[in-house]
Length: 133
Image 1 (cartoon, rainbow, N blue to C red):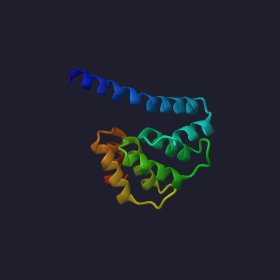
Image 2 (tube, rainbow, N blue to C red):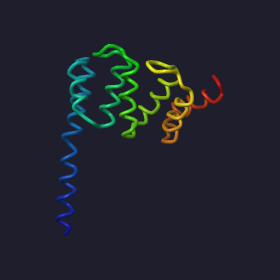
Image 3 (spheres, rainbow, N blue to C red):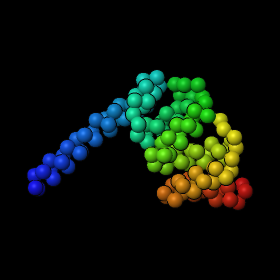
Image 4 (cartoon, one colour):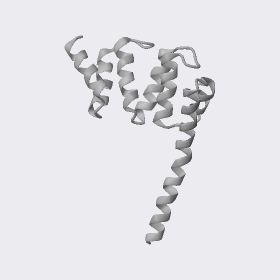
């Protein structure tokens, strides 16, 4: 029974490695400013980090035309998978009305979600929003 448990653990760890390797290669392409390659690689993944990076690339116009609406959509996908940074960026997008209608209630919702998970920039943004700054 112990051998089965060990074999299962090893299989679980090994099956997770290719996914990490794919993200690492996509991130490497991004850092080398090979944005088309990075974007294609990120789009082949469905993990929160890859989805966040696609949103970030649309947000900043890296390898694609800058598009706040697209950025918001990709950040939302990443946030749905638990990305705290994506939750925070959604708060920023709604707070500023970048690519979407400005909605301070929605901004507050996303800042709260990220703040609840301990993301300090979200806590600070939420405080500023509540103070009306």
